[in-house]
Image (cartoon, rainbow over all chains, first blue to last red; front, top):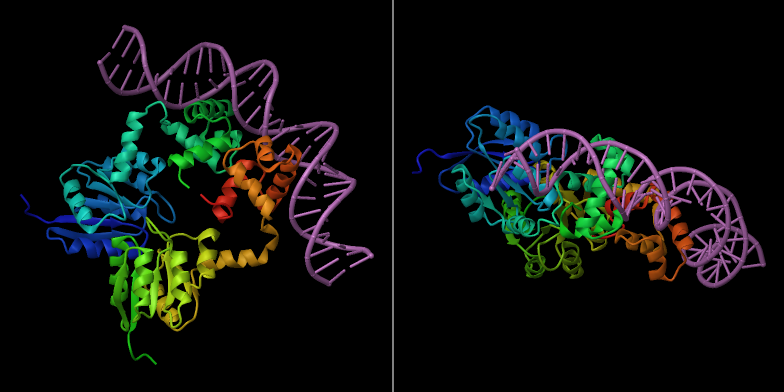
Length: 211
Length: 211
DNA sequence: CGGGACCTCCATCGAAAGATGGAACCCGGA
DNA sequence: TCCGGGTTCCATCTTTCGATGGAGGTCCCG
């Protein structure tokens, strides 16, 4: 089954993490790191050049595009490589966009090296590996559909958490203030709270939005 | 000047990061990684056994003791090694306790390898290296002492962050709603914001309140 | 083809929250 | 002793929120 080695692209803005991934993965037979990218933009460019089987993608980069958007751009092309998310963040706000963008797997950086290598092989095969924490979150989301916030609601709440007024949120998302209020009313109902600050506190506790 | 190599202990709960630090530092002449620790407790124990010149310490570990406390325990002993913080977090709430605990330097994980090696040598020498972001924060804190919230103000803001209304905060602290408003008005002025959610966001970012 | 989510927008009304400009008290230090 | 910072309280006025109860639209799926 295993003939040609699996070619990897490491996309992470931390040199130390790239070196660590390289060190961990290159000791594995059949895995070869052929490129690194320090920005999401570079990752998209390099992935488009071909020759990559699996991209290990961080979600947050210091500047510019995020990992989720980069993932979407990479997977949009025909014959695109698989994208395996490797990050430290496990809130809904991070996980859902990444999965929607077409990520093949989602691992946390505290994963042991064996799991990492196994996940890379699974990803190269087109199958999914999820970190236990991530899997838990997704299961909870399926079990309690009433509580789950929709994509738009999460987006609104994230901006509210940054201290924006309804009007300001509307401007940012190109909505009327009334629409923002509608979303918030539904959010309050789902989270069983009755004010924006309470909603932010509840959502933070549930990991729906990131700290 | 440089005779014996500098012995290093890597304390980080991420295997990938430990591997990355090792890879980056061992290519440097005169630096030798002699031990690793995956928990803060282990780091304290290993540091006490001697033979370590510099500990590279992460601040947050999945479980148990944090990096700041571990730093305090390590530096408390006579003839203790230097502790260089290497982490991804740069909020006041992370920085200040670490420095108070006796850390010799504070770097962020996105630092280039050269800076890292240079900081290790500086630390071994007993001198301080601070990441630019960290230095900025400390300078700002010294320049604007008016920004500091009083004990009462912090208390009020913490309850607001939990989602309580002004009236509810007043009840909790045995104050009238008017008094709570007074405190909040002063808090807004100090943080340069104009709403409760913005104040919570700002204070969270500055590490004034926890979560 | 229908539901059924989801997203968008509307209007009105009462309730909080925020702005403003005070005032009084206590306490510790110059 | 007086001063300043912190804490508590007050009243008024404006703005923003939140509650309520719709309504029309898209899109996907059975």
